[in-house]
Image (cartoon, rainbow, N blue to C red; front, side, top):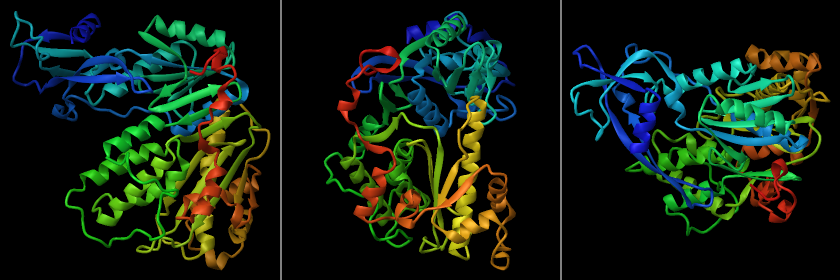
Length: 504
């Protein structure tokens, strides 16, 4: 506590001023946390002074609060490129990051518990710097970091505003997720020079080669990279008392979920489990459809819904060590798009699904219910094509911001010939005139030769795993095609990342 208080004083976080009746006083409290390594061992004990942001009033204590964070797809793109081209890949942590943000508003806070000034016990703290807990703290920190990176010559990506790029004299790419930062690029010397420059402005901890980022565990060798959340899964199983549950091989049963069954007396457990499962979809595309299903009943969960959520946990028990593999190969962009027409039994809406590969590496996927009812399977598939095309376009823009060029036109595979025909020319007009104009976006891309839509048989449609519950054999087959599998230590016996002789 004393170290945290000293740090706040040294940065001039506040000044004491007399209390006045017109001031809105924000409370504060001490928050204690045990920081752990990926293997569960204790790293350090941490105390942090946190403002009670719920005491703030809009328009008085804060105005804008939005702060961008890195998109999961952008993270996977950079990881895939780092593996492909053997890039330098380090992670940084900014100590007390939010304390460096400058406040634009007048915010008054109580003196910290246990650290009141004996000479001015009735004074309050007028904050000059942002503090953890304030609603505008993330934005104030990002604005500060943005100004610093701009002064160092970086420019902000138009596709992902948390991605910063500098091309001269050599490319360096910086990805920001609050106070966690990834630095990558082809030249290690230039990257280290940038880290040293940043260290002169902020208290930077260079954590070395990427190994544990936002709860994602990373193992890297000269042959590839393995991204997983095994520790998070084990913690979730213990938290939900499912560590001793019987494993199962598929995340969903054959019986579709609906609104039948008795309401749960306390929905908190269900919502807590489902919220935790959402974060696992960062590295587990095989969970995407199952989590999408249980998320649809958050408002009034019933007993069958809780059993479905626990089945997902049983599936995780059987696949704790599974994660995403990133391997070397080409950088051809390939996508699979599918839809399950009228698959929802109670509102008859269709579910769209897609998965996008960069070479053999899966970088983006989705399972999402369509907003309106589709009148035909062609319409459902066509809508899914449009959503997939939009995602491909965004990925291509990220590559443009990185100043990298795809060697081939992206390929989009679909198992519906009518939807493919509709994407290429305005056929079936009488049966498709009710389709919203924005779904015809893909037709412009096809005509401009920016996307090539091709047919794939239903048996080889990889996006099928994101649209419906599947049999065990079908699910395991598609799961094996998604660059998804257990950790294999034999693949990490070579030199580690960034020239290290061991795995980070």
